[in-house]
Amino acid sequence: MATAWYMRRNQKVVGPLSGKQLKELALAGKLQGDDLVRKGNESDFVPANQIKQLFIADDSTSRPSPPPPRLGERLDGSSGVPATPNFPKKWVVVGACVLGVMVIGGIFLTVTQTKAARKEIAEAAKLWKKGEHAEAVAIYQTVIKKRGPFIPDEQEPLVYGRVIDHLVQEGREQEARQILEKLNSSSSSSSVTPLVESEAGRQLLADIRREQQRKESEKRKHDEQKALAKASKNQNPKADTFMAQLAQMGGLPEDTPLPRRFFDRNSGHFNVPRYCRRPIDRNWKYEFSYEDWVKAFGEPTNVRTSPHNNPGMGHVWQHNYNGKIVYVSGCLKTSIHWKPLIEVDRLAPGTNPRQSWTVIVH
Image 1 (tube, rainbow, N blue to C red):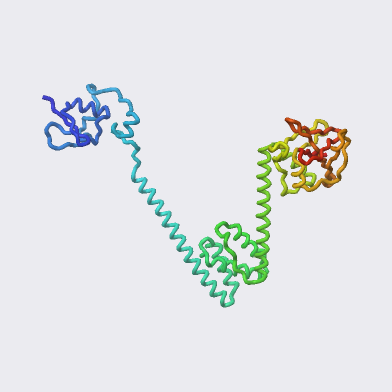
Image 2 (cartoon, rainbow, N blue to C red):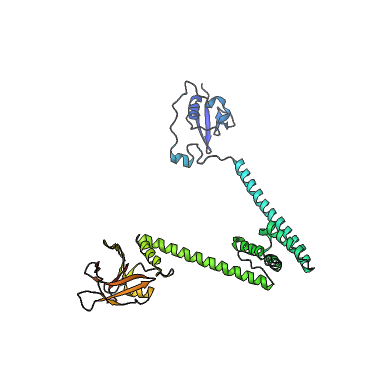
């Protein structure tokens, strides 16, 4: 009689099974090495991988490779395949150790450097009180150079202030300026205000602050103009060209951008400016409301009459910017379009502020 085998999984015993059946289960992947099996009536179950011949294929048990387990089987573990790959625990431990060493090393470095900075600053303070300012400042400068980030916050103003005072009094203003400029450019020390006592030191500090404010203002203005130009280009690629022409004429204030959209009181809608190029004189035309022009640039000058057949509508506003002439003339609104009445030899009039206007750069 063939030997009976039993398999235990999830507290359930399966069997009896023949040795051939058990081997087929093992080769098919349905019996794993850590599954428990028992031979006959033996009292103890042992792991299947202890049965050496169980997972070795022979001619009688050779079978095609089984298909890979389905996704559901892989997820619930019914296939015997782990749902997640086994990551070596030793690498987790190694990574944790490395991280711990880095953190501890950083803390140790901060503590030791801060302690050394305090000690050196205390030595310099004693020399300063004795009137040995040159020796004290030499130590202060060494601390700034070697342990700058580790100087205690409450001592930074005094350290920098004494260095600035001494350098200015010694006539080394350029060196003091370099220290202050470096201090202002440092993001970690941007809030430090040196505690200067000399009048010359205060004056130098005030000068550098004014220069810093001027640079920040110029940068902010440049960024705003750049953003405006980008927005203008996104709305109409020709907008930059028109503004560049006015800027070259010297009549466009840098901080007064032309509006991009104008409210039409006749229709109650916004009129988006249009650009067109005259085929003969190649001058740009920009459509806008008269009130917006006055708001941005002031009242027109040199009002003159245009030779137009329509009486009562014969006014043209002429601007003179540094010898360059800018004509602002009226446009009549049709039922569908804004129709510029601009001719080569004459300028169409229009005095109604509610109507659209066109600027022509000659």
